[in-house]
Image 1 (cartoon, one colour):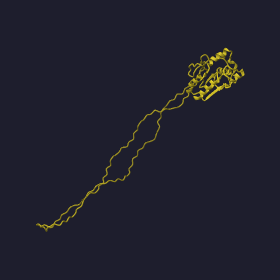
Image 2 (spheres, helix red, strand yellow):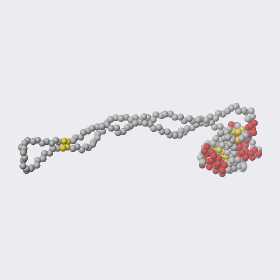
Image 3 (tube, helix red, strand yellow):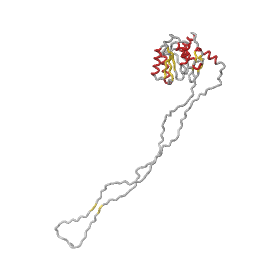
Image 4 (spheres, one colour):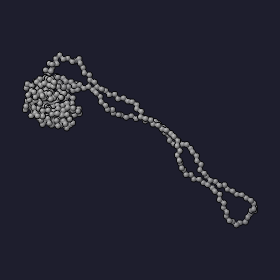
Length: 281
């Protein structure tokens, strides 16, 4: 399989239009929106070879993609031989692996193997002129051009932001309790007793005794109860202020910036952004 993973950009060569169409459709179905099929008018790999001028046109047509010139020349050569190139850009990280599986499943070719076959057949990447007149050259030519170019004293700083979460006290307002006096009407029933003196006169018939005609006085006192209101202040409730301290975990979401580095080693292939070797297939 031939593909290039350069910052969420995936590309693969196919020998037939059906394979390329299936791969492009499957990439769109999983959410890859920027999918382009190159060589739509090609008859299929191995059935045609374009002239050099048209081949250079293939090279320049791929200028919008961030491919190294030698890889772009290889893709242009595959197109010039009637093949098809499927390119997906801006692929989210979570879709990269599924997209690679689709490209391999649908029959993408091993581009390194094809390059070896083409070179044995006399192919030379120096025949392709890239954008702005830059010439795509083979690996051995690039090494020769770089002779005497020493940048070992230079360095690239890898910068990464770190996020620090602090805390601060926030005034949420005041709870205030105020007391005041008001009169509330009350009503309560009480049972009162009263005594009244009644004069009873009963007719009798009996003999009068001694001293029947002496003067006498009898009396009885009348009584009644009346309601007496007394008030007593009683404490029926206490109101106080206290604080409850509660803790909770809050997820703080933000973004941090970091420098990513992509290392290309001519002898060992493309390395990933962390500096680990990544085989170009």
